[in-house]
Image (cartoon, rainbow, N blue to C red):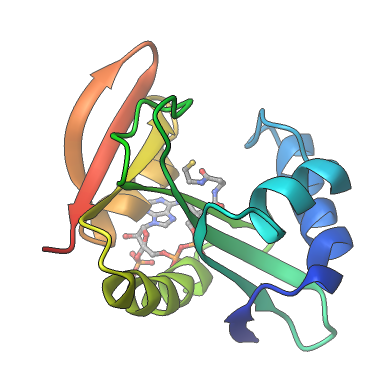
Length: 153
Ligand SMILES: CC(C)(COP(=O)(O)OP(=O)(O)OC[C@H]1O[C@@H](n2cnc3c(N)ncnc32)[C@H](O)[C@@H]1OP(=O)(O)O)[C@@H](O)C(=O)NCCC(=O)NCCS
């Protein structure tokens, strides 16, 4: 498995991985190729986008940081990062999320972003524990979500 920057050719593989997460009940946002391309691959607001690629070339994970604008859907302050992490349901707890974050953190620190927020459903125990393990701490809660923040300053 290797971690590398996301490439336009990854759209189908990312879409398949996100669809598997949705089928497993771990994702509610869209997973179709158009959404993947415009949100995670060819989005001008992307600060960082990395995939984890398995030996066979299958996409096993994706982590992005998107620069929040004035109307961020998760209430992230403008100019802060909004982080998202997705690991295939059959590849969890093997360190893929941790390795993705090593790559993301290096890019984000270089970018000068002040902080990143992670918005997590309040019943998503693995997501909450993952971000805690990466150093994020709870900043605010409400409407069924917990937002954890990591400052880079
Ligand atoms: C959350 C998620 C990204 C974690 O990815 P991962 O590759 O399994 O994470 P890692 O194996 O690198 O785990 C790193 C640490 O996170 C914590 N963690 C991860 N999965 C966990 C779980 N199921 N239960 C408890 N702690 C967990 C642990 O502290 C773990 O360290 P350890 O294994 O040494 O104890 C992955 O489970 C996922 O994609 N879930 C569905 C989507 C999601 O919830 N995304 C995040 C919130 S929006």
